[in-house]
Image (cartoon, rainbow, N blue to C red; front, side, top):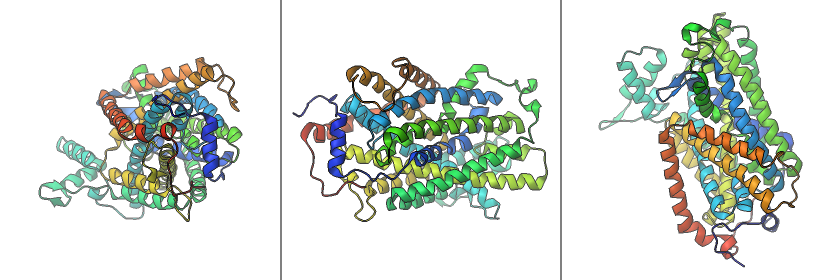
Length: 521
């Protein structure tokens, strides 16, 4: 019997029957494929681009200084508790859709819709930020080959305007001069300067084509990039450890190890949370895992452990090479090497390697997140909450190509114009909110269905999920108020869409729709 309640739940058995009836996605991924997906999604724009802002701070929040290592630990703890909750759901509900599917089977359709709508912020909006960060490092990489893109084809309006203003106020560093030229030397349509981030647009377009061709090709491409970028980070650590100046860690002139105390550590933790977004992307591939009950928890937790170890080591070396106040750039590792004392040839070669590594790192993040978003659309469409065109599959490649192409167009277009700082904050609050709902879902389902089979169980329920909820809420409170306003507007738009379309077309409420397309393998 159809339910009229907006909190109607889909049972896991029903969800599995739907997948079985439709054919399901092709199960090709083992535990190390899944771990690589998590590492590939996690190590990227956050560690390569936003760490500088977290160390130095900005007008709205204090920086952590060398104490950034504690910020990484604080965020890792919060993510660790959330990862346990994701692992329980991923093993218990091995179906595409990530937190959306988990909420549908535990809390109900309306909350599932909210979290699915919210995940657009994490994957699609987050990927806009990643594409922008990729563009900056790609531009740096090109300079090593004597190629210099005009600034008006490699940045956004706000960044160009801010640099132009800073230049007028007396700034004279080469980076500011370059970005300011986008405002002063760009072509114009009337009085409007033409400024467009072409590399950010182009990389998303290329990866969209790769993803349309299939999950196996995508996973193999990601594995190559993951191996490359871990090697690059280890290279930076190996070179940087010999360039450390101990006085940079605890210089009383610059405020010591923690110049802004715990306030700086907390504010930085909210920023560098962007560095940890990605381990949950493993859960979007649950329907493509060979043995989800065993491999999903392994992939989620192992990817988080690997990334945390690398982050802590990297942050210690980074703040030891250069004075922390100098690291507030979109390329903090490259900036640190520019301030290092060492052989000029070695330092230049190292900057080239880091730029190459950042391009590979962010490329793999782009690939995994572009893979995840269409599969969330696919699950929501299969449930009737989004138009059925989003669950159409390619007749040859057997992938959800319509959702993949639409996601690519959305991300590529906005990446050409958006500012990375605003995108990162919005992504962080949306992802933290998803973590809160998943953690709450674990508690709810333990009490509503205590006898359900759980191949992996979160220890210490309800305390472990409650700690996850409180830790995530704490990090959300460290974000600027304008971010909360934007997030609220986004949720209101989502609620309106649900009642206008989703509620009326819900498969749970009205039965399955006829769809000429088969489900992708």
